Length: 140
Image 1: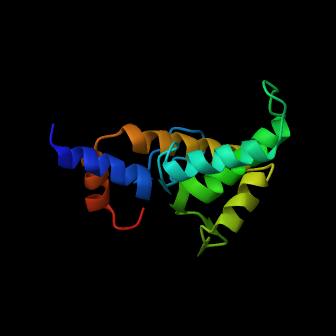
Image 2: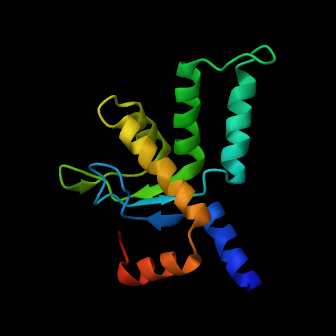
């Protein structure tokens, strides 16, 4: 295996790559640019947010805190860009907009699942797949 290929995988995890064809109901035309779910920034953010809870050793993290932490990690360290629109106009992929959509009871869970699925794909899919996708479409 060529070291360059390993570097390409590392680059995708750190900087992100587009993922299409997300196999979730209603996501057939969704494209997300995501970083790998365990990139260094995501791990640091997740660790800091858990430590801020100041829970006793061995205590379970309350579900509402797990949800909040998940939203923060996706918005702050995983989701880079998307092809979402609202009323025909491109919806900016800013941490604030991402947080708002992830907290929306009508679409938040689906967007979170799509982002986490895509971030797992980025870390494990070969570089050739992403290069081919990029050649086939400038904008997802």
